[in-house]
Amino acid sequence: MNYDTDQLRKWALKHLWMHNADWSEMAQTEEPLIIVEGSGLRVRDTNGNTWIDINGGYASVAVGYGRQEIADAAYRQMKQITYFPQRTANPSTIQLAVRLAELAPGDLNRSFFASGGSEANETALKIARACQHRRGASGRYKIISRRDSYHGGTGGVLWLGSAAGSPRTDYEPSPPGILYAPQPLAYRCEFGSTSPSQCATRCADEIERLILEEHPDTVCAVIAEPIASGPGAAVPSDEYWPMLRAICDRYGVLLIADEVITGFGRTGKLFACEHWGIVPDIMTVAKGMCSSYLPLGAAIASESIAELFAGENRMLRHVFTFAGHPVAAAAGLQNIDILTKEQLVQNAAEVGSYFKEQLQELRAETAILGDVRGLGLMLSLDFVADRQTKAQFPKSFGFSERLNTQLKNRGLLARSHANHLLNLSPPLCITRSEVDEVTELLRQAIHAVGKSWKEKS
Image (cartoon, rainbow, N blue to C red):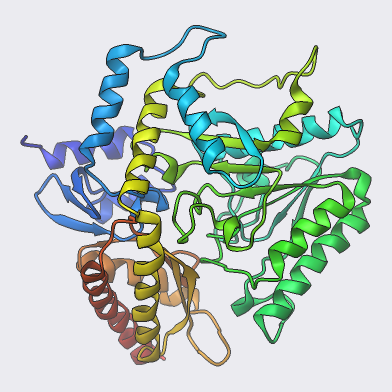
């Protein structure tokens, strides 16, 4: 098919409100790219140029682009039934709920479906607060999240976490009862810890201190990503999650694991909480569950939580029009089959480990690369102006803009953020040879920025 790229771009700049984008700025840089085709981790634009998507969409394209099997599954479902009358169910959605119950840790076995991660986390918060009400603890309304985390963009979860690069002043005032705890990122620990173990312990202790300070009878839940994406693949030391689970149990606080990014193999386990043998009370998933082929997410509750919503006047009063959509469910089932049959979770663990090794070698030769971290194929590069002090670049240098330009010049689609981070979450089907190719292009881009910094400083 022939495309008029200039016309499409003009229309996009005039009518399309894109994610976190300024259309006036994009107009000056010949953006947006108009992507029309993809296979694996490569996509093609309307001008025939091929790009490597090293962040897998929004860390969400797990099985890769161009999987005909998923399109066929969605088409078959659409030919059967495209939606459902009120108070009815359909085979695909039921089967997906059963599949999640089989795969999820522990007794997490009842799913409320949504259209994505934000809705899944909104659902989790409503379940948590309603659960406390049904337990007779209506005073428990406060939610603890961690600074520099991200849990979605809708009106409620927007206030969870507190990424410095995403100010929320436009949307103030914040709702009551939102509390913030430290992020267990050893490389930039708030407490100046001398080891990952010390950082993890101090950060977990701070959550307990916060619960006690606010009074346990007012605290509803703690929500946290097993590995946080906002500060760049923040993998906590092994002490952290068992401590957090024990603290929540001690004070009757629910634990919500946000696995929207980490779930379905991203970290080399099907769910990241399995790295620490932890079963949360509620787990949220999206992205990799359907590899972003269709909008799909879910909040999965434990048996003990779900049973509180059975009985007269006890149901969860909550609905999204597209929750449990049969076509999305069919695509999700096919996506999970591909993950399983092609052993992509194991591939994420093995090739992810190889990728991290290559990046660590790159760090050894690159003065501005301060830290390489992550698990599986959820990796992050943390850049510094001075490796000894870990100081960030002055805003006047425009580090992220410089790196983004260098990446784009080499056909890599990824964006640095926060003036020092680059997250790498490619599709789980990436091969070692593709890792070698990507690493070399990253090397060239980073060295170019490093040279500019050296000349400036």
